[in-house]
Image 1: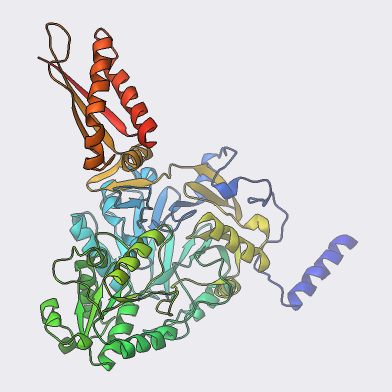
Image 2: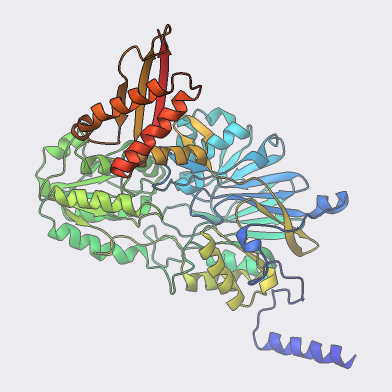
Length: 602
C-alpha cells in the first residue's frame, strides 16, 4: 500500500511539473524494439488469432503506400468490416525502371470490398496523393470521394481523363467541415502545404480518435495568408487522441521549414537581373508558387505564358476557384509571347524533375517544336529533385547550359522551399495533439525511424510507437496497440496501358538489353541435306557502331557456319549458337549481348 501511495504521489508531482499526461505510461510488450523487433522492416513474426467479438471491436490501420518510400501514399482505416481510404497517389520510377511511367499502390486488399468501403478522403491535390485514383476505380466502384474544392477539381480532371468519373461521386468539403460515414465521424482541418486547400483529418471511431496530419508545414506567412488551424489541433489534443499519423518527409532536417515568403527576394533578383526571357519550371500542382512568381513577374512588367496541358488545366481550375489571381490581360499565348521582346516574357512550364517527355526535357534536347532555348534565356528550376531523379535533373541542367541558357537551381539560389515540416514543427504538432500512440507515415524507412526518435524525445513511450512499412497492419483493441497480419503491398508498375503486368523480371530484362544490346541471327537450312541454304544474316542493336560491326561481320558468319557444319544433327543447335556468339562478344568487347537465333528450313 505504501508503494502504491508513493507511486501516486510521484504521478501527481509529474503532472504539477507540466509533464505529458496524455501518454499511457504502462509497461507493455514493446511493439517496436530498436534492437530486436523486425517491425521496422514491415514484418510481423507472429500470427494473431482473434475471436469474432474482438475482431468486430478492433480498429485497423493499414498502409498500402507511402511508408518506407516517398510517394504513392495510401492508407486504409477499418472498423467492423467497414473501411475508409485516405489518399491514393503515384510514385515516380527511378532510372533502373526502364519504360515505367509511374508506380501505384498494391490494392489487392480492396478487391471485392466496394460495398464495405464507405469513402475516399483526399488530403490535397499533389500527384503522390491523388495520381492513382483512376486505378483505384478499376478495383472498387460506386464509392464516394470527399475533398476540398481545389483537390476535388484536380481529382475530377484526373478521373475524367482516365474514363473513371462515372464510377464515383465527388463530394466537396471545406476545411472545418464534419460528417459521418458508418462508424466514422470525420472532421477536416486546414494544414499549410505547398498547395492550397490541404487538410488533415480527425477520424473519431468507437475505438478512439485518429489524427492524420496530411502533408504539412507550419508556415506562419503562407502565400495565401491561411496558416494551419492551430486552434483545432489544440482542441483535438484536449479531447484525447488515440493515435497520430504524421508526415515524416523532413524528419532528418533540424529546425523549421522556411516560409514560402522567404523565397520572394530570390525571385525578385532573378527578374531584376534577367535580360532575356525567364523560363520557370515547377510542378504543375504547385499553385502557391505559380501565384508567387506571376505576381513578381507583373511587377517587372512581364507577360505570362503558361505552357503544357497539366499546368494550363491546374491554373485554369485554381483561377476559377479563386486560389490564384492573375489578371487576364497579363496572360498571353505562346505565339504572342514569341513575338514580344524577350525581356517582357515569363514562360511557366513543367519539367523540373528532368522528365524526358516534359516541356523542359524536350527543350533541353531541341525536340520541342514550338520554340527553342537560346542564349540569354534564364531557366529556373523551382523544386528539389525527387529521390531517384537527381541524375535526370543534372542531365537537363547541363544540356541547357550547353545551349547558352543561364540556369538557376536551388543549390545556387533559394528558389524553392519544402512543403514539409522539419523537426521543430513535428515536435510542435506532437505537443498540440498529445497522442497516446504514434505511427510515423510518408517517408523512407530512415525518415520514419527519425520521426519515431523525435516522438520518444517528446515523451511518447517506445512501446507506443509503431514504425511499419506498406502492408503491415496495426490493430487497436481496448486502447491497446498490436501488430496485425501483413497484406500484399508490392510495387505495381504502370507501363502505358499495362498495369501490374510488368514485374521486376521484365525490368531486369530491359536493363540487360540496355546494357548489352541484342544480336539477332537468322539461319536458313536446306531440308534435303541439313546444311545451310545461304550464309547467316546477322542484325545487332545497341552492341556496336555499324562501322565496328562491319569489321567483324565476316568473322562472325564464318564462326557460325563452321559451328553449323560440325553440329548438323545437334538438337540444341540454336542454344549452342547463342552461347557461342555471347562468348565471342565477351572475348572481343567484354560485353554480353542478348542473342536470338531464328531457324528456318526450305
